[in-house]
Image 1 (spheres, rainbow, N blue to C red):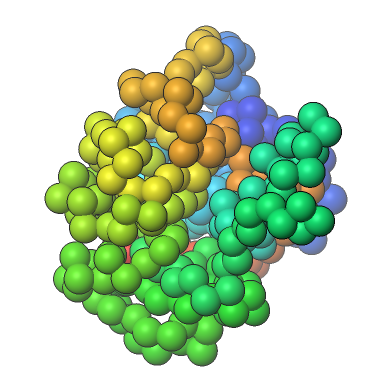
Image 2 (cartoon, one colour):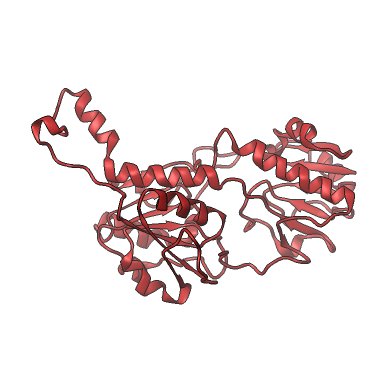
Length: 332
């Protein structure tokens, strides 16, 4: 059987995948910029494809039965373009890195080690106890609100509870969790938002979550609230978020996901149409929260195991489009 690693993001892991597989597979690769006729030939006899985006402009793939995303999000998969009888699976294994990123974001927001370090390097003791300087904050006792309670949300909840935080969540399927103090339905979001010191966006992007945080809902947040988005930028409307940060309607934001991304032909794309980089109450990172040294072995280990299941006729895991797939919704 043949698996095609379709784009550079997948293709660079060909040797890793070959090492992790326990069943025989012919591994082919295609990178952006390769000749299209090579893609036509590669898809013509592919049984499986590993790719983050599958759209109608791709050549026919008559044998294709499995599209395996090497990422968690599958909003870039065009369900209408999926060949008949083919399923789409995703991966996770990124909750460790992202949850550590979220904890770092909250701790840095409260402690301000970068600012303290900069002051001390300039020779100032102003932040120290020896001169009775100003105190810094703690995450202990703060309320973390998590929108979406899937793999990432629960991983953050476990860590936040260990730091003595109050943890709450809003999800479409509310149910009790050991590491969450209380859970509400998404229909209670308006009453829930004002309770949170930190608001973590950790739900999938779907028709129901696009623009979930809009201008009226941002206005409900505490003026000291900090929004952390590690999911998809479009879950928060861009213009209202920028205005709320600029005008001090909320305390700040830590943003790792964006409204615009670079392409192979244009690597200098600004991340948004509004100048978030000019705001002092915004921490910006280039979608790297999950980009850790341990991620790839975990993820490609899962991909290899799913390909092994496929070749052995066993039930695939993490089907998100196709038979046995859960409907697209806010996981939790």
